[in-house]
Length: 141
Image 1 (cartoon, rainbow, N blue to C red):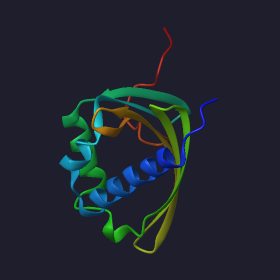
Image 2 (image 1 turned 90 degrees about the vertical axis):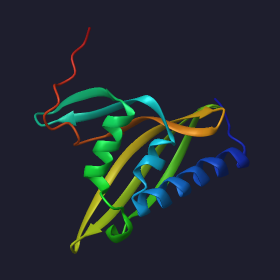
Image 3 (image 1 turned 90 degrees about the horizontal axis):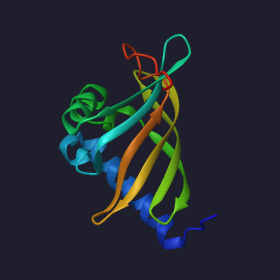
Image 4 (image 1 turned 60 degrees about the horizontal axis):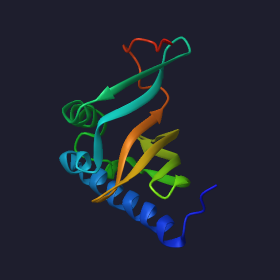
């Protein structure tokens, strides 16, 4: 089992601090610069089935425009992240987050796969329930 160094842990937390700052400002193209495309997504659809797809950069940018618009600054977003290193170049990061919008709190639990590139960490896979409305359910084979 791979044991990350303190510096590796720090680098993942620093990457998310940069990501969060960009999301707060609504800098969606800059967020896309932090990813590897095609990006893998795993979610679920109404009725209890999983759904998976890949997004191009353009699809990611459009989805983020719809999701965060001008930014997350007004959402009262807080996150606790737990990196779980698979190797020195692969880390799954579980996030427990809450956001407050119009006085209502919403809690979320999701995971991202970060991969180490020549330019540093990049996210490549997003896993979160509830994004699959209108997506076809996953099938085997």
